Amino acid sequence: MDVMPQEERLLKILRKIKYPGFSRDIVSFGMIKSLAVQDDEVQIILAVGSEKEQVKKELLKTIREALESAGGYKEVKISFDAPRPADSTPAAKQNAASAGPRTLPGVKYIIAVASGKGGVGKSTVAVNLAASLSRNRKVGLLDLDIYGPSLPMVVGISETPKVTSDQKIIPIEKYGMQLMSFGFISGNTAPTIWRGPLVARMTEQFFEDVIWRGLDYLILDLPPGTGDVQLTLVQKFALSGAVIVTTPQKLAVLDVKKGADMFRKVNVPVLGIVENMTHFLCPECNAVTEIFPGRGGQDESQRLEVPLLGRIYLTPEIALSADAGYPYVLQNPKSPITAVYHEIKDQILQQVEG
Ligand SMILES: Nc1ncnc2c1ncn2[C@@H]1O[C@H](COP(=O)(O)OP(=O)(O)OP(=O)(O)O)[C@@H](O)[C@H]1O
Ligand SMILES: [Mg+2]
Image (cartoon, rainbow, N blue to C red; front, top):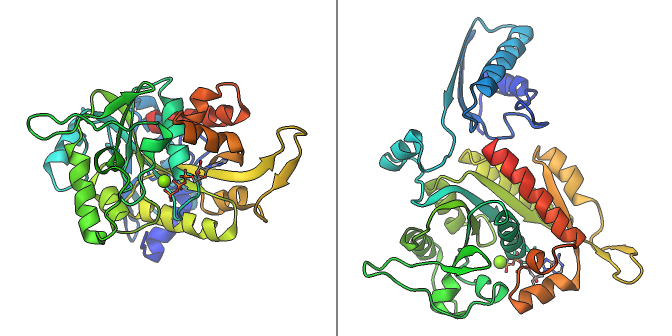
C-alpha cells in the first residue's frame, strides 16, 4: 500500500488490532478497505465478512479505544463495507453491475492458489485442498494454466466437457467436485505461441464460459508467477482470498513476497502460506532429512504477516497419487499429510466464513 506518513501511523495502530476470535490483525487480513487522515480527523472503511453485529461492535470499540490511547485523533469515523463476497449479497450484485471486481454466478467464494515460482506444488496443493474442502462444502476446481494444465492428469480425466447450445462449458464431475481445465479442451498441447495479453484475454473468457452450479468454493489453480494472467484475474474477479504455495528455500520465499504484494495491492486477503516439500520423512525409519537449507516458512510468514497454514513434507506417494489420477487426501485418508491438509482447510473456512 502506498501511504503517506499520517496513514502510516494509523496503520501501525490498526496492525495491533486483532480480529475478534483470531490471533491475526485486521490489516493483514486485508480488512482495511480505505483510510483517510486529515489533521485530527480519521475516516476508516472496513471490509468485514462477518454478518454478526457483535463482531462489528467489538471491532468498533477496540479501534476507538486504540486510537484514543494513541492520542491525536479528535474525530474518528468508522464504517463497514461488504467484503469480497458471496454472490447473493446486495453488495456483490452492486459490484457486478459496477466496474468493481465481478462475482461469478453459482459461486460463493473464490480462493486463488498461487505461487511466485513454478514447480513448487501449487497444483498438488490446489487439488488436495479442494478435495479436503469438499468434505464440508460444495467445491469446484478450475485449473487456469494454459501452458501447463495439470488437472487432467492429477484427477485422471481424459474426456472433453459438454458444451451447452449457447456455448457454455459444463464442468466435469469427479470425486464429488466440479472440475475444469484448459487441458480438458485443448489436450495437453499448450499453444506456446500465445503471449501475455492473449493468454490473459483467453483466461478471462474461459473464466466466464464455465457454468458452475451451487458452489460454496471455487478453487483456482493459477499459473505460476505474477504476470498478466494473474493480474487480470485478481483485479477483475472478486476473490475471497489467496493461498500462496512455496518451498522453503530463499529464492522461493522472495517470490512469496511478490505474490503477497500483488494480492494486497488489490485488497485480496492473503489467507496464508502453504510450505511444500519441507523435508523428507523416511517411510521405513521415520528419519527426517531437510531438503532445503534454512527455515523459510515460519520466519517468512511472520515477516510477511501472513500465517503459515501448514507444512507438507516430501513423499513419493504424492507423486504416485498424481500419476494415478487420484487426489492424495482421498486416497490416503489416515496419512499425516492428509491431516495437515484438513488443518489448512479448517483455517481457510474460519478466515473466509468467520
Ligand atoms: N509434497 C510433495 N511430495 C512429493 N512430490 C510432490 C509434492 N508436492 C508436489 N510434488 C510433485 O512435484 C511436481 C510438481 O508439483 P505441481 O505440479 O503441483 O507443481 P506446480 O507448482 O503446480 O507446477 P507448475 O508451476 O508447473 O504449475 C509434481 O510431479 C508433483 O506430483
Ligand atoms: Mg501447476
